[in-house]
Image 1 (tube, rainbow, N blue to C red):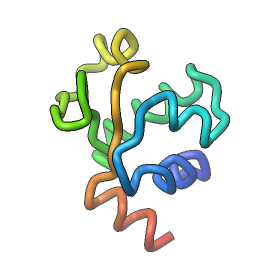
Image 2: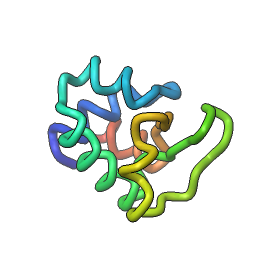
Image 3: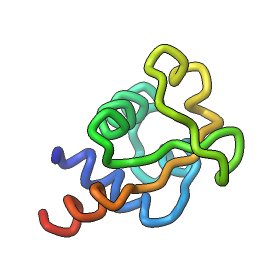
Image 4: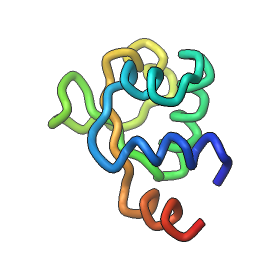
Length: 85
């Protein structure tokens, strides 16, 4: 787990929007998107869209178009890795 992934997981114990994550981590939108993509591929986080209750299956080709409107939450695996680092 990278330092950036660790910092993002710090914010995902509860559902957070892309905008809130960007403000709390101070990553640029493109940097945050790249980190989130990697974390989704590793199964460390889950993505929700169009609301915080509807899980969205990660589709790499569509993620960039909806990222601004998505919500994110750490998975059990993500929390375990975060807490054992």
